[in-house]
Length: 159
Length: 159
Image (cartoon, rainbow over all chains, first blue to last red; front, side, top):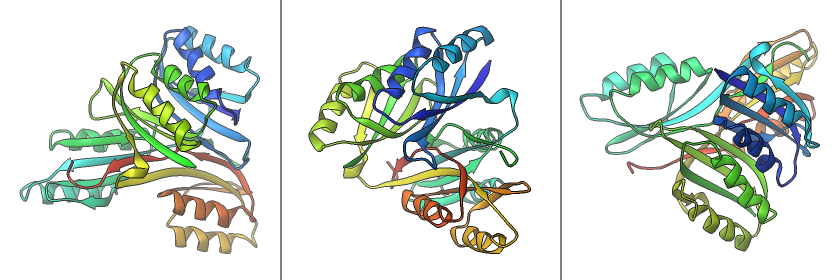
């Protein structure tokens, strides 16, 4: 099962190594990770998507919570969050496929950020379903390169 | 100095732990990391932003290149790339500040994704300058929570 773990962590060298070692120890593969600065310079927010049984994930979150640099940890599956992901896609383009491509980009509201002789590069931000929907549409046309950020999320409401 | 390293890596447990251990070993703090799937199921793309001297970063990239799971590694500073980052921001809002906020969101083309009694949540994707510009504008008004993906990038042109 896919789990999404969001953690506020103190910003120092080694945090990422120790956190990801906790996943490795339990043999859990991290599907995606996003870690960036927050409103507080000394704190980073880390969002990890991982595949694993509920028991294995529970073990990892317990290990993580025991680490001194973890300030707060949430398992996003249980709460109400706004989630977003960003993807950059470089797609093969020919004179014949151009019109079809542009229609797909319009439907998904993907922005063209670059254009070459044989390829076109677009960005899309949205929830995972929307991002995966666009990828599925573009796969038969030919994706040359792709780069995804992994999911980020904020709790809904005022808290 | 800020460095951005982009690597294509084989998708297996432990990759993240071993890569981030290489940074820790050299005492380099990772500012942000984004690791997600690519067009190939077995391969992930990892983009790491890190602060360090050119020599320290050179040591780390050499260590990384020697690892069996690294397929390709680029130091983005030297090349021509499209870079993008995604941020979710929850900002304090009052009747008085609402109008000013909406104007800022329009200038930066940030999308409102949630609204509460006392806060408003927006998303913005753009290059680092644009993302940091919005954050700088919102800081005096009051950022309640923030979540950044870290930078992702694709090479410009058809390659």
